[in-house]
Every structure is written in structure tokens, then in C-alpha cells.
Image (cartoon, rainbow, N blue to C red; front, side, top):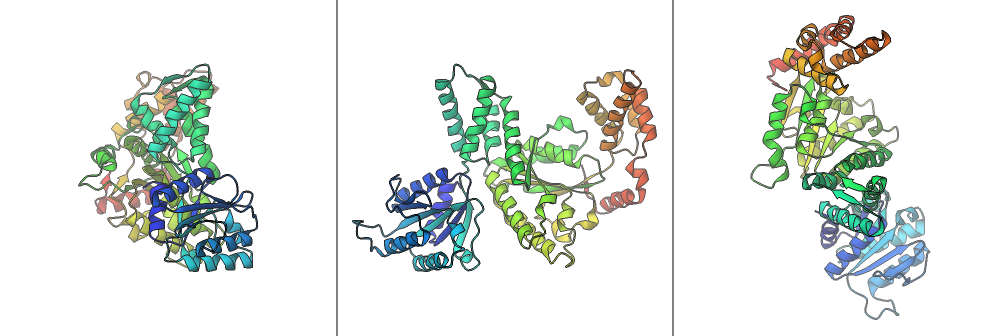
Length: 500
């Protein structure tokens, strides 16, 4: 459901007040005007600088910039008592920009509440536009809250075509080489940005080298990561292909079996997500990136360090915003790394009940969500996970990531050697795999990196000897924390948790 459909549904449902979180006011105002036209409503808009306007008329209908005076006029419009308006419509949408900032004034708040109480149950609706606006406790229950200003995939495709055509008209040249598959990825990557941000990203790609091709997907990903890093709670990550991870055959097969159901409306419901339990450093985070890559959807990580706040109520608000953003971005893969940390104190009251409320919100959303978002959660500590999270319905499946066996270790060595421009054929990979029994994938990667430093320091070409030396110097986690690792492995074995 796009924004125009969603706002029309709320208006038809006779909500007296709708709060639209947006950073693109012009786009939302245009969508509201189109919705009003489709419903046969009169459209009014007000801002501090432009006054009260009717329709899309740039000339103010009333030039007042005083909030209380404007509310008096709106009150008269609702009553049909405006003398210089020939035939006021019985149904109207009133769009106020940044008006929540005026609700700290007692007179404005009282007038506003009186208007809302009068239009309850009528076709009239007040829409407030702003970035993360807040309402007083006595007004908030009268409202519905949605996000706006973010085009859907069809609108993004239209904007891509418009940007290419416009650039060709104004620039000396533009070389376009965008196969259909790459174009679909471009559109999916741009989803979640405002229309203006979409335009900015496309212009940057085209201006950079006079080309628009598959290589621009990387540039768009960088642009999007910077945009989301400013918001803080959700962090954008690039995905990986399945060749970038060794092992995990069961996970790869599980995703492949459900990939088509994720995008099509058929008898089979789309998969909701999976939980990866296991030993630290055994590829769970990398697997989340591979899952996003295999599904062909963007990947966002929920930053737990920024989720929690010392201020009362702000943690729950942060989570609400993050989940609303995920719904806006769908289809999307939400990566929750070390998910047990969200619910660290959910069994007690040491944080004033914040973790309990966060757990309740998260569980309800996971169970009831209807959007096409896929959760890839990881955990190193099964003792920190509440039992409610592990029951069927929250996740479709739970997998256990154990220490890699010999074939998987061979694959890991090959991946990390190739990643650093080295030919695995020049190394004794089977011998290195045999010498690294009990090592995690992260420890094998670090052994290769340390060997590169060692060879460079000795002014030698890296060889199996250097890697073998680093393996002998390393005490893996399976030795240092043997009891904890053995407990985790036995727990998974006793409960028949599927191996990755």
C-alpha cells in the first residue's frame, strides 16, 4: 500500500487527525492534494510562512501566519461560516506544516483540540506534517501516525526514467548500459529514500562519469549508507553472494527453497526469518549478508548501541521508529546481531521495565507484521534469549553454526587467500585445514592476515609456512573458553537444532 492509498484509507475511516512523519513536505502535500481530488474533498494547507491556502493556489487564501488566528478560520470553514467563500465543501483535508511546534501554547492547543473533537465522525481530517513530530498526551489518542514522502518502486522507476531523459537533454552525453536485472537492483536500493534523495543519488551517479550502469549500484549503496547512518538506529550494509561463505549448505538450500515465495502472492506464505545460534566467529554475521544477497533485497542492521537511551520512553520510541522504517523499506532484510542483548534484563526490573516493554513490542511486531521483511538474527548466548523468542511463529527456523569441519576450513582458507589477491593453488590448503582444527572462521581469517604481516616484515613472499606459524601461535576460542563452547554445542545437539 503506497502513501496515497494509506492516507485515503485513514480519511475514509474518519480519523480526525493524522500525523505524517516526513522529510519531503512538497511530495506529501502533492500526494495529499491528489488524494483530496480523488475523494472529492477540498484541500487546504497552512504554513507559518505561506499562510492558509486552498487547493494548490500559491496565493494565500488567508495570509495569517498566526496559529490561533488560522485555527479560528478553520473552525469557521468547518461550520461553513466563511463569508467570502461561495460554497465551502462539507468535506475537507487540512494540512498543517510543523504545527506540532505550536501546541506548547495553551490557546493554540485548546483551539486545536476543540476542532478535533468537532470533526470526529465527520469526513473532515487534519493532517500534520513534520519530521518526527510529537503530540501532547491528550491529543495523541485522536491520531493515526504514518510515514510519507517515500516513493514506491513504480514511482522510483518513473523517477529513474525521468532523470535519465532530463540528463540526456541537458548534458553533453550520457552513456546508459543498465540491464533489466541491474535496473531492478537500482530501484530496490533506492527504496526508502525520499524523492529528493532519490534525485540526488541519481544525479551524483550520472554526473560522476557520464555513465549510468550497474557499477552505479555501489555508489547508490554508499549514498544510502550515509543517509541512514545520520538517522542512527538502522545501518545500511552491502550484501554478499553465497560464494563468499564456506559451508552453510543447509541455510543456502533453505533460502533457495523459499526465495520465490518471498516475492509472490501464492498459497505459500513468505518466510519471516531465521535465527542463527552458534559459536563466536563462525560466520553467522556473514551468513546474514549472504541471505540478503540470495533474496536480492537490501540489508539493514539494527544498531543496539543506539537503540537504548537514558531518557524515559525514548528507547521504546527509537524501536517504534526503526520498525516503522523497516516496514517502509520492505522488501528488506533486517539483521539483528547478537539479539540477546536487546533483552538483556527482560527478566527483571533493574532498568525500570524498559527491556520488558521492548521485548513485548518486538515479539508482537515479529508475530503480526504483514510486510515482506525478513529477519536474520544471530546469537552467541542461548541463556540470554527469552523462551518466547524461540517458539515457532517468531522465526521460521533456528540453525546452529558450529566450528567448521575440515572441508569448510579448506573453503574458508581459499576465500580469504583469494580476497587478498593470493592464489590458493600456491598454498597447502588441506594441510592448513588439518592444522586449524578447532579454529573458527574469524580465527582462520586473522591467521591469514597475521601471516601477511609476518611475511612483509621478513621481506618474504607469503607461503604456507607463514600461515602455519600463525596457527601455532594462536590459541583458539574453543581452547580458551572450552567449557562455554562445549556447553553451547551440547545444548544444540540435545535439542536437535539444525546445523547450518
